[in-house]
Amino acid sequence: MESLSNQKFDYFITDKNLNIFHDDIKNSVILSGSFNPVHDGHIKLLNYSSEILNMNKYYEISISNVDKSDIETEELIKRIKNFKSDEKIIISKSSKFIDKSNIFPKSCFVVGYDTAIRILDHSYLSPGESLDDLCSALDKNGCTVLVAGRIDVTGSKFKNLEINNLNFKYKDYFKIISEDDFRVDASSTDMRRHDI
Image 1: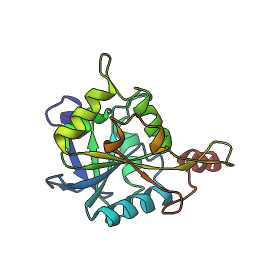
Image 2: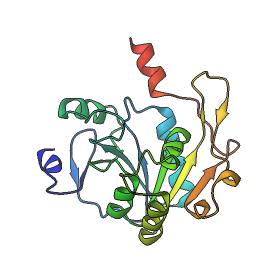
Image 3: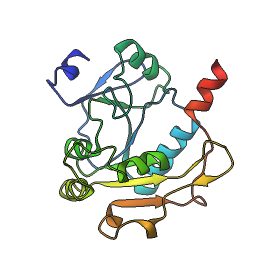
Image 4: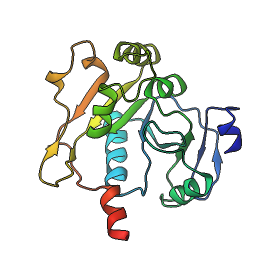
């Protein structure tokens, strides 16, 4: 964890028992998130994405986040311990998808609707960067973004990106999972509320 924070390396791979793995992460499906906690929707989405793309699967937790405080070691271990024993979790410090694509080439990043909206409104870009820069990085590194819809905060409407609403320059890099193909109404926020 200290070496990651000091930028001695970009990531490490672990499991709930804190074993360390040395996989070469290429041609993989990566579901990034805070996983506070991981839930059935995350698991089913990653499994579904891995199966339809025939790629290895990983969760990714970035200890550095765009719109949240950095995750402390004790909290990170707590989140890791919530995963199933056969799941592999990448721990990185890459909060932005340009960085993720450089570190994990030829990978597909699976995101929910809310994260996709933040990507498209520049929240996941550094100052001075544009969506053109992101798409250039995705193109150079052979990466794509797979978007799954989700129920809104009111619990009454299912939302997802409309591919026809995307600028044509970006359509090749964003793939949409239709509601008919995949829908699980689960939320880490709701789970935390019920734990209170």
